[in-house]
Image (cartoon, rainbow, N blue to C red; front, side, top):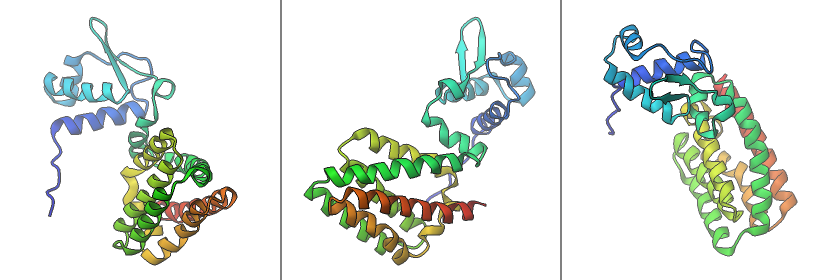
Length: 228
């Protein structure tokens, strides 16, 4: 068995600061209190605070300027998709908007893949689809399903679609356990996804798009029910 990671004081402080920022307790554009004040307020050392600040700067929530202080960034204006996992952890309402993008991007990927797929990629898609049927119910099927979608993105020949696919999966990773509904039966999961792979492999763009849209809507409905 794999040991569970231990949460450090820096992890806890980072989480508290992130929650306070996203909840608006520290207004966008405002300077945070001094390090001394914050360290005392949170009951930590300034070294611990600096480590937490460093993580939040990398996440795009804070910016630090020597001689001025640490300011809360307007992450809605300057942030990127890499913020989505953090936003989902703070507020699961983001999932609905993520799934909306998942539907449109997923259908577009399937349509383009149908026109670009190679013989090697067809073989890979069928192999990965079979892995869905053979996977362990739940988490195993869910992860196998993800690999099929990554392969579909690769089949487009456009690396940006691959990165978008990764971004969307990473976005709902924090609540992935609650979204396992469509993947509890390997045979059913395989049957849902097979028409998409068949259409892409056949080079039928219209069928690839329509079957992908149907698949994405169906699985989204089941996942949203599990989340609620």
